[in-house]
Image 1 (cartoon, rainbow, N blue to C red):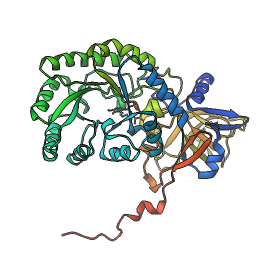
Image 2 (cartoon, helix red, strand yellow; image 1 turned 30 degrees about the vertical axis):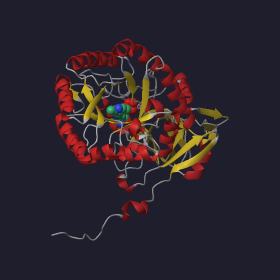
Image 3 (tube, protein in one colour; image 1 turned 30 degrees about the horizontal axis):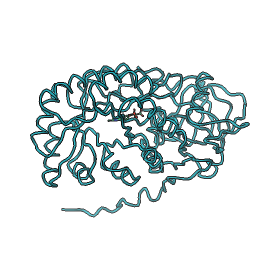
Length: 442
Ligand code: LLP
């Protein structure tokens, strides 16, 4: 397992917390925690909690670092929209020059609404409906990554109907295993992602025979929160062999080598995967292919830049345990209960009251509704605020309305100012589209 991925329990080393603060752009001035220069208490008081807060500068810093790391290769960064699809966050990345990696019609609409050029959008996604394929072709999406022969047939119908020629890629399952949580490992055989290695050449030839599909990309995505460059190198080794085979088979239209996303960040004591190490590991093989390297990071760009603000509702002592009940639950941040993920949690106003080990749990009616277990925490009181760190990726986007809870507000901090970029959902609006008295059909 990836280091630190599989337990929400326990403490964090002070130097790791310092590094987490730095990654996010967090700073304690006196007792008060500031993000990008803004006191988080102002935001919590202003919009209420739970609220997600993102620091635009922290996103920019990660982008610049990744771009510089790959500067020795022709490359393109396509942000994986699924990690955080707030339009204001997308706009920050678009302004930096990123393309977008999308997996659904909904993400296509968001990417277009945020101003991404359709030609810089890659449509990955393990199951695309005919309607989504048609929308993508209509919009002029740059690349559609094929996942199967059935998808090829569906796309062939769409392009014939639209009378358009488009660029496609093939997402290969390179059959390598990455050392990460099994739910976010995507590159081995026997799972649903990608075209099995030995079927790629036939699929490429079938695509070419279709006449309106140009096979321009070979892609892989081996998993998420990867901390070691080895599986990338291994996967790329397999792709390089395939590329040679495809060329021998007469596919002479290849332009892009998409190595997917997956760069792991620090949540606790992990050593994040430095983009420089990744670039170094893949450069010799990538260079040999002569193709443009496409990287599709999500978490690396936005994960550390975001946090979730929450308010303590009550304290309980039960069965020898100290419990802190907060107003953010698994419906707001599902990563701890779904992946047993570790997110550091700190006070917004440091009060330095003596505390102890506590479980930090949410208001949802599930025993599995926790944000952290067995954590050393100061003696917090009802009404005080906490910040859950590392929540910029797969936080809000995975939130739900379970227990009829409105999804949290989202705030962007930029240049010493802050703005609500998505208001908290309204509980009445949540049920307004439902029909209490059904209009029966038939
Ligand atoms: N490209 C493709 C084709 C993907 O499927 C993904 C993520 C990415 C890029 C971006 O991966 P990243 O750089 O963010 O690791 N919900 C999980 C993560 C699921 C990732 C799914 N695919 C979590 O909270 O850890």
